[in-house]
Image (tube, rainbow, N blue to C red; front, side):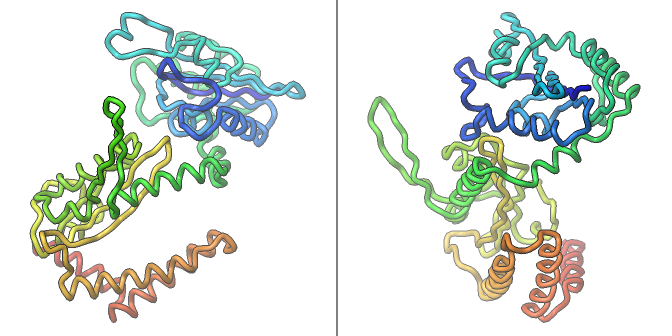
Length: 364
């Protein structure tokens, strides 16, 4: 009996990539290999796994999920991984940039064998004939080129792979915790601190300090400018992209929880709510801040009172979040305390505050 893994990947990397590290700096290729092994060890013997999207990224560090990878775990003989990627194509690469190709992908992602993406369906169908269990996540939308793959999935009726991978993702390794902390630090400094940026131009190293987004709000004219400034400062610290579409909402716009238009002019004397974070080396951060806009940069008395009340509640809740507490019970307890403390601070119930916000939105 055997276990078999199939990983979806398109493996596009710069030619200078090496096997020592995955595509994300700070996490070694051996850690990704360990994740794959732990997954297969947790599944029944005779399992086949078809991996794509976020699951693929977590298991292999591959960030493009167009092509696939197969890994086989032989009982008493370890496991083998088979990677399926696009072939090298000089003409296509002339237009779209270099591909890693089959041979290099095998080395970089520590696979045992590599194949062209063109033979994926044939091999998957062959492997599944002797499989006892099949794990995969069926896409909600299917391109014309994926019809054959979908027919295989429908015929074999896979169980959810996402649930199995999430069991592993609950516990973060030291390398992951460092990466998460770095992503949070970059977003935090971009929100609230002057960031030192070191640039090397013709061997002359010089330093300049960037105004944090809060300070930039003194002169910014629109929500869009604040969003652009935050992304710019994050990028100069190494972030590859925003973690999500930011919310930059001035005044009453902040009452809409998922406001992302970010197209209004800022008004002096109002506050702006900014929910923004960066993605750094595959790990995301998520921070929400509120602050005054305009040259003075000062809270009005009502704004200061509201801000101070919420800050006090937040500080008390953070003290409750400790690793000694059982996770689910802790979250429920924090939620109850949140409702109680917000009611005490505002002298009104959370339901009443919500209804007032809705009324303000309707009157705009």
